[in-house]
Length: 112
Length: 115
Image (cartoon, rainbow over all chains, first blue to last red; front, side, top):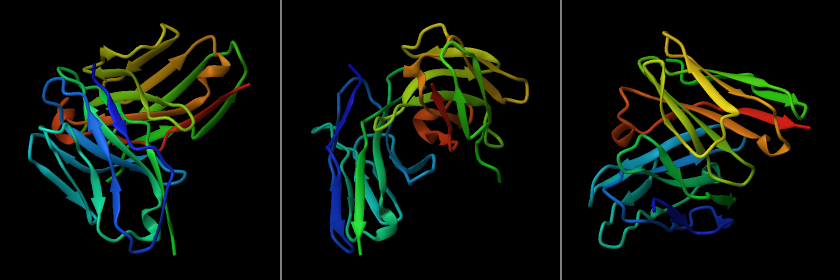
């Protein structure tokens, strides 16, 4: 099928810690992959994207690399800030479709 | 540049009633999709509109219907509301149906509570 599995939260880190949120997808077709972020009380914002294998998406210090061999798209940031506290969603397109398939989301809390 | 605008922001309805939610896409975007996000879950695709027609539909009953207007704005209608329809309803727009490349721009959503 077309699914996305991301690590269960919540994740709690101290400021300046290293962040990894794991995400894997089912290898159906050649999806585009995205990370969306949802800050408290707000809608979803596109954080970064990768449209083909080996692409690296990056934005605001976050990075994720499209790994076809491991069907993964892990989100990383070298030094998190309190303002990064949010829910992060790993997302794929569904083959032959405009539909987005979301993971369940990972809540990140960064403490000062 | 205004992003995706949704109205109302919050809504309380009674079981069995009908509701209409509205969305104005980002300027330059002609494709509108609707998603339902239950509390603590990822959004689920309801349907997509392009050129005033429903192009794709997710696994939602016929109680969920929509419309797209010539100016690309859209409405989501839900009939015979159930308690389980309580959720955040998100509208998302993209240019020229190229979601695979652009992703979507999401609105802040309408929080629907059915009592």
